[in-house]
Image (tube, rainbow, N blue to C red):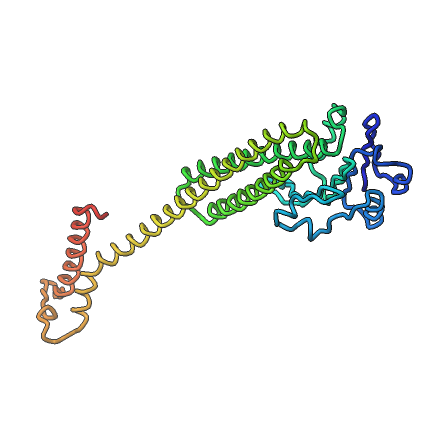
Length: 327
């Protein structure tokens, strides 16, 4: 789908027929927005603008030159945009080309809030967007505002995770997975904010943009630097939370090991006594210990003595552990 924004009266032509380019000139068009364009539509725009659109591989490259570059005929910029999906988001690349005549061409494969908001601003105050350069800067401004919202969203999730961690009686796998997911989202967000920073730095060094744009660029760079610092703080906080969670898990495991160790030590004397009397040597005098009652019953005292000795040794061991405050 192609949406054409005309300079005169801020007119918008949606689902434009490619034959419309035969009736228009550079002076008539402000912005050409393409969403999942067909091959026919791409060829029509390339022939009209006398430029080559970026391939998917070129758009997804991470080199600085692929993020912002200038040629004799156009300015090319590729940037990643976010699509929120619940508590996370996915990344979609967008390609921008600005011709020497000031016509902006954007190519994307998904719908973004950034473009809808920029379109609203264009309709409300079209006199402030006289060229494609102004549209491009407005898109970046809106995108930075939404990046700030995403940073704030992650900050709230980190705060909620910290609160849940303090209220949890035990740390399970789910908590570690939440921490890992937030770390991944924070790294992805930080990486794409850096991407915005590189684009703005390239624009700031350029001499092709109108002079009224450069003061806005200074403010945008300050905002981006602030977002990077905030994202760094969130990532460091997640590292701290992860260390805390792992420390609590280690404490829980140590408590379990401690219980088994204490139980083994408590029953060790009883086990030793049982092992000694389990040898059944005939020389053991306890085998003959017995008392005969008046009714003729015989009570084996050696058996009772062994049981009493085992209970006494285990009780003394437990008392000693409590005395040393090991229990």
